[in-house]
Image 1 (cartoon, rainbow, N blue to C red):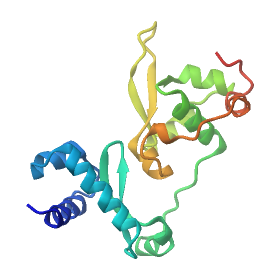
Image 2: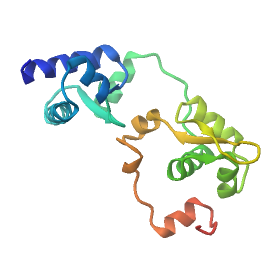
Image 3: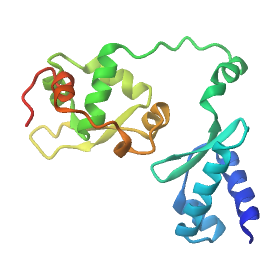
Length: 182
């Protein structure tokens, strides 16, 4: 199959899927090696970015998703009924930042860093699919570990956790409420 046909098939797969498709799954379907496929996808991402199209391909944790351009949000939201979804509270943002930079992390550690109970913030982040349970810590009581989700990456425009901005020492102190850095 020639490259243009592969690109057309990839675009169709991403459109039909609706969700992110892993590089591995696309490779299986097209019977194309991952290295070649990654090159084709990166070329497609660049072509979409440089075009005047209303859609783009976003990479999320070595998966790819067809989505609308963020700059068209104001128009696209008019298609749907207005949602009464509230934004995240300061407590939820703090909890999300702590989770993102320290994952996997227990609720007790989050509360130690924040200095307050975080039940409500964690519950809201779970409801919004921004964090998820990531197993249990091998410690007394087997506390739940939390980590961020692909929805977190998508919502904040990151390809992976490695893309999070690097915090300077003074920012770490602020995030951790002046707790000593271990």
